[in-house]
Every structure is written in structure tokens, then in C-alpha cells.
Amino acid sequence: EPEVTQTPSHQVTQMGQEVILRCVPISNHLYFYWYRQILGQKVEFLVSFYNNEISEKSEIFDDQFSVERPDGSNFTLKIRSTKLEDSAMYFCASSEVNGLYSNQPQHFGDGTRLSIL
Amino acid sequence: GNSVTQMEGPVTLSEEAFLTINCTYTATGYPSLFWYVQYPGEGLQLLLKATKADDKGSNKGFEATYRKETTSFHLEKGSVQVSDSAVYFCALGSNTGKLIFGQGTTLQVKP
Image (cartoon, rainbow over all chains, first blue to last red):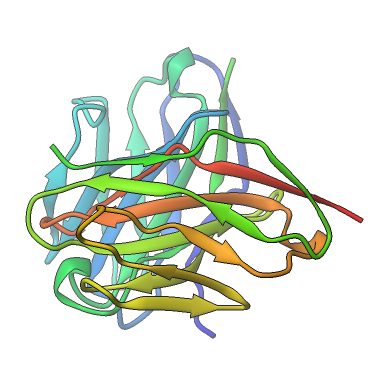
């Protein structure tokens, strides 16, 4: 069964540094998402992406965050200047169509654990 | 706004016990509802879904029924196994496509 893959599985970065988290969504999927899960807390929506532009973003997704689909397969999340509170598990997800109007749910990768020192 | 509330965990059960994890939601319209499971060290996996009122989602012995009148989507399993130990997330599909998750419920099944 096709999978969403994320790299790296664990990223350790000094505060203030830039970090790029990478995702390869399922190949025929059109909608892409990033979520994060701070340790012990709920999974929170960050951003959705469709047709090469952001569809929706949460309050968490401020100017320090950006997303990009640089080629036909990768989907990246960049944090420009990391803060301690950015430490979390970041999940990428993709879906074939918009979840509300379809039976196709979102498929998640295994996540990247980001640790900011 | 839309939200999901799950019962507090952890839930600790003996093998073969009956499981219920409560989930209620607040939403406008008629969202799709999902249960995701997260095994230790892994990502989120879709367990089951329901897209309209009175639908029953089922998978691997787990079931949940979309109850519009009580705005609930409780997860049940008749006989749990040690391998079911995981964190279970109830989620709502918003009208913009994003998922809104509950806080997760940890299930521990002891032999």
C-alpha cells in the first residue's frame, strides 16, 4: 500500500537555526497537510496546501514557517529561525481529495521528531 | 468553532475485556468523523471512519457509530488484545479539509 514518507525521523537543531522537514506524499494525492504534536498534547493543524498554494493555515503557522512543493514529489516545511517551543513531532499528511467531500481520509507519515536545543 | 472531546486516559484493561472510548464533537454542518491510532514510535494510522449520520465504521474488530443526535462517535471493541495498546485519536473533518483532533486516549491492555 502506498505510504507517506518523512525524513529525517529525528532532527536536532540549535535554537535560531533554520530547519527543513521533508515529506513525500502519496503520488496521486492532491491535498497536503502539516500537523504537529507537542509531547503529551493533541495533534494540531498547521497548514494545508493545494494546487501549489496554501489553502488554510492556523495561528501557529506564523511568518517563521513556510511550505513548498519544489518538484512533483516532495512537500517541505521550513522553520526559518527555530525556537525552543517548536520542539514537537511534525506529521505530514496527504489525501486524494478534500476530506469533507470524499470518503478518502488523510494518510499520515511516521513523523519527524524535532528537538530544539 | 469545531472541536472534539475525548475521555481522559489512560485506560487500562485486561486482555479480552470490552473497550469503550468516548468521543463527542461540536461542529456546524455534517462533518466526516475518524478514529486514528498511534502505536508506540509510529505515526497516525486511520482505524475507521464514518461520513454521515448513523454510519457505522468498523475495522480490526473496532466499531464506531456516527450519532448526530448525541454528537458522538464512541469507539468500541468487544475483546481487546495486548497488541491494541496504543493512543487513539478521534478526529473531525472540517469544512476546509483539515482534521481537528481530540486530545488522544492511551489504552494499555495487560495480559
